[in-house]
Image (tube, rainbow, N blue to C red; front, side):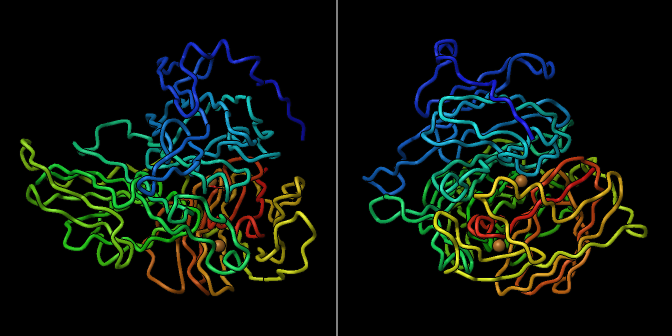
Length: 456
Ligand code: C2O
Ligand code: CU
Ligand code: CU
């Protein structure tokens, strides 16, 4: 593999006109005419002090002026053109989680591109084929970079109006901070060997116990994104009239939220919530713990009705009858003490192989080679006592069966594989490239639970 490092900032002068400044990302539109010159967003990653614990500063890293970062929006089928400027003290990339795009835009270091060094920029340009709720994050030193706040929502709007008149985006993240707002370890080996290292302070849109207003009596589309490194939120909204309209990037037949929904790291859910009378509140909870509040405020609109099902995305339907079957076993090794200096511990494996994030050549040894255009069924077997949100880059897959629950088949990019669960997913290998396939508990991914799948 060879990459050129042509996109180096030759002094910031030319860019200063659009308003550079630590954390102060500017956003501007040039009209989306196509890939050519220019960009729709200028996204700056830079240090940003945030106040998570009242009276204390947390030295976060952010995309734009907030952490989670600037919300990016684009219309389905259009180009998204982002000039990414790295003003961090470390190298990084941006990965566009859930977007089916060409490999060169996927943000994986040494596979898609070279890491973007401090002071450099990189232009990301791709067309977004699917509408839905997505997100973006680095794929370099992930436990620290995501842990410090480098995560942000990417919303792809449907081409035609959907019938939702109101919309909110709710980004969930738990921060690894102490009582003074100082960062604690993003990954502790003892925890990485179990469910992953969790932060202690949960926030919605960067605010502990945040409040989101909903228009009373109206149905609002609420996009809930789990941008956390580790936590699977057992989401529930007691007493709410709430329907699930989409899971991860893709629509499902609307159904009641029910008792709860387990949203693993990287996963998203699109809810429709009919807000109660003005002044009333709903609490958004993780199991029994309140994360934040939806507050109903007076609305002059006439009460809206439940919109119809969202239109399906153009994802190829796998041919199950003729699909080739492949097995993927997720195992715990836990050989904590034998790793060489400077290497993360090797705790997890897929089909007997552990990924080493310090070895730039791992992607040269894909765990499976798929033939372009063919259908495949992956049998996922979790041989561990912990759950793993299994994520694939580059292609969406259809969840078709599980030995643990009834599955209504649906397309997604991340499946929360329960402890000791076996599940079957299917896909058409229609995007050529070398695609990461990993657990989205970040310190599981960084201690072995990642592999590459080649499509050619
Ligand atoms: Cu959110 Cu490798 O992914
Ligand atoms: Cu991804
Ligand atoms: Cu995992």
